Length: 180
Image (cartoon, rainbow, N blue to C red; front, top):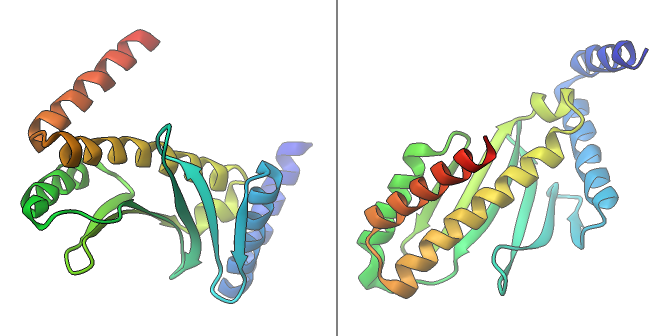
């Protein structure tokens, strides 16, 4: 019975206009934040939510969850400032990540000297699958932690981007072997 109800609900949501679909996903996004009992701020007019999450033991950052251009977006700043001496290495490390990320991209603003991680998915996915909003936020947060850690190694330890990525791949491989 629940499968039938879920199927019919998906069919109904598909028949709605784009504007109504966007409103439903926006409502689901706000409901998700409330049910998760996160501390957040809602900006109705611009359809985005600011939420604070830890990205390391001692660091919290503002995550932006938005709906626009037929997509559900998650965005966060990884580095708020960096030395211009590191610009080349920051671009190299960002390029390494951008080569392996599926739905996200690491962006660098050289003028304001910050790095952000932006992930987006088509609006139809969270529209049709209830748990996808939470799953997307969770994936974005977990990936942010890894990216933040890598950029911190670059900035604080002056480690080469290739070494940072090799260490991450090695750690991922080890984690996957331990799960089996």
